[in-house]
Image (cartoon, rainbow over all chains, first blue to last red; front, side, top):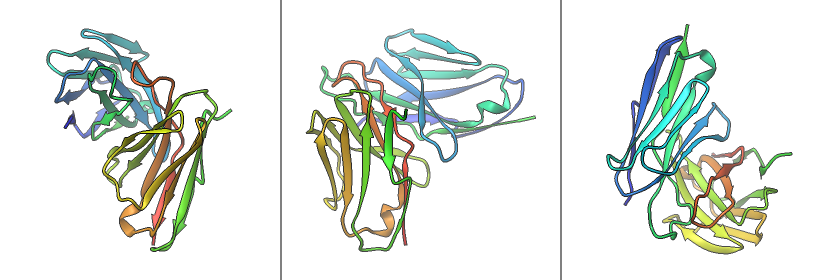
Length: 115
Length: 114
C-alpha cells in the first residue's frame, strides 16, 4: 500500500524566513501534486510535478521532485502571513495507467506565519 | 461559475438517519471522486467514477453508496448514519482517466452526526 509522509506536520514561521516541507512516498511514482487548503475551504492545486528533477515555482513557493529518492520538497522563501494554510502533497503511483487518479495524500503540514 | 459544486455545504443530522450529498461539475471532466477528510485533516479517497462507471471503490462501509446519473454528477448516499461518519466530504473531478489527471475539488460538505 502506498504511504505518503510529510514533515513537519506543524510549522510556525516568522515572516521573512525560509523553510522547507518534505514529502516522502513509498512506491514508484513520477506524478506528485501539492495542494493548499485554507481553514474551512477546499483544496487548491498548487503544483503538479511529473518527472524526476521537475522544479516548479510560483511566487514564494517552489516545489521539486526526486523520484529516485521518492522525495518532494516545498520550499517557502521569505514567508508572509498570506501563506498560512495547510499544505498537502499527494501521489499517484505508476501503474501502467491503471491508477485512475487514485491520489494518496500526506497528512498535511499546518503552516502558520507570524510577524 | 463554480467548477465543482457540492450541496449542501453543512449537514447536521441524527444517528440512524439517511442523507445524500450532491456533486456537479461543469468542467466537462470524465472522472469524479469522493474523498473523506477526518477531524485530523487526513484525506482518503472513497470512490471514483469514470463516465458513470465505478472504477475505484475503497474499503468503506456499504452504508455509503455513490450514484452517477451522468458524467457531470456524482452523488453520495449514506444510510444509517453513525457518529464516526462525521467528517468533511469532498467531491473532485479530473479530465482524464489515468494519464496526468489534476483533480479539482469542491468546497466540501461538513457532515455532523449527533
